[in-house]
Image (cartoon, rainbow, N blue to C red):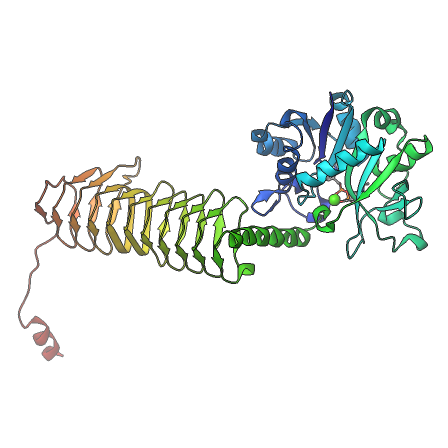
Length: 460
Ligand code: UD1
Ligand code: CA
């Protein structure tokens, strides 16, 4: 077997002060370790990716199961060297290993391939990917034999740096390639004689050098790519960068994004050309937006499909919904899962839909709840209309045909069918089916008492 990738993801992430395991914290709309797996899966098959899990192992395993990777459980987290030792029985028969950190999510497939190729070319026992970030504080430092050569003497962790090494600029990215045979021959020699009392994988550099094996460093062109996320603040910095990357990619495809630094766009989102996105918009998950749309400020759209030429006015919340071409949504509409808004339909302010289908050109412009409803083309839903879809136990469907006029403040008690072309008088409570072209009234008859108010006032 040739190459396996081991992703170390067992640590607790003490510096986060969070109950959630570190590698499941999200940046750019995805868990840290999922970014790493996505990059690795372009290099080897998922079955050749081994994720070392430990802290909250079952939670991490469940979250990552769909990726098809394999898992190694490191029950006690005794350091990065111990993480690899735990994986030994699974990976010792591969020729070479690439080791990645589950908390360094910016790594790209290209960089992994560059490390692999350099490692094989150099016939090294260990290859260390390094970088020179503006501030190296906190990282282990790679000490080379000489500046001109790739050969390494050792990796020195921050806490063990000698006075003259404090400003050593070249950091250990935590990304390595190893010749498996050399690694496992010497891995048992690691000790816990260090500041953390842990088995440091970084000590393999000096151990292999001592055993006269070749240990080399390769500096990455882009120091950004190897940044680790050890604190929430660091994660949010990476998050902002990833979102900006997503926004730039969309702008390159003809999308206009005003003040892109204020928008939150997942890398998975697709948007067509000539769509305009105003400040403070969130586009999340598997959202696809057509071309020629306008998404006004403070709208949040998640896992939804929006057709071409749709106007989404301010403050709309749309999740798991579909909106067809030319529709007009908001301001302040709430489209919940399985809502399907037809071509040219209007959904206005303070209208909530759930599992509701609005036909072509249908309108629900003001203050309504439409749940489990099927509404035909050209139908007008008056202000304040409510579908009473829940009887306390089960949900029921309201069916409204085409070109129906539902008067304002109507209460439609499901299960209910209102046929094409009928009228519902304003203020009605409708509990029985309405045939086509009928008028249904369901309200108390009005009583008017002439001069009543005048008399009352004169009594005072
Ligand atoms: C490590 C390196 C440091 C390097 C930095 C780059 C060591 C000793 N130090 O430090 O030289 O500059 O990465 O980001 O390796 N993990 C396990 N099991 C464990 C311990 C850790 O799986 O027992 C995992 C963590 O979940 C994490 C990764 O290994 O994903 C790195 O561990 P972390 O504690 O973050 O190491 P750093 O202190 O960042
Ligand atoms: Ca780290």
